[in-house]
Amino acid sequence: MAKFNALSILAASLCLFSLLSFASCVEYLRVQGTVYCDTCRAGFETRLSENIAGAKVKIECKSLITNEITFTAEGVTNETGGYNIRVGGDHEEEMCEAVAVSSPRKDCQKLDPERDRGPIVLTRNAGIESNIRYANPLGFMIDNDVAGCAEALKEVGFRKKK
Image (tube, rainbow, N blue to C red; front, side, top):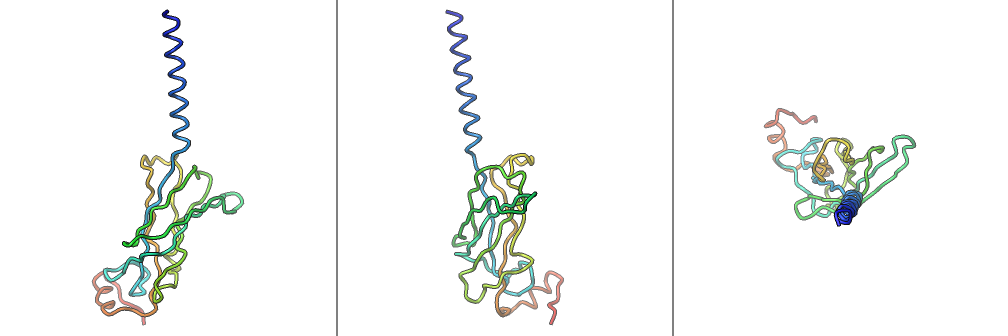
């Protein structure tokens, strides 16, 4: 009888261990960030910047060895300009970035070359316990500055170049 109980406990433990291993294999990460319109064409967010609803964003990973794209996932920003993209797998051996793709705003469609992409760590082997990875804000530039930009830039210690 004692042999049977020990065997049962061992079998149950192996099953539980297998289930836990399987669960960790199917877990995923989430990349969260925002997309904004640089309404002052400053190259960074100001108090006059506006988040963009309906902007397209993608997560792209490339092999560190071949530089070939190994993974992509796409998303669209919500009404507050935020996105939340699910990423499966572990991308420890890859360089991953959040990339701004397009803006629905007719007056703000030019990608900001300094804010159109940003690196993200998409591995569980980096000491980050959370499944959420936060990306830097991604930006598009407005065609013409809005009123009040000179004051907004002055408030943060910048002067706009003419």
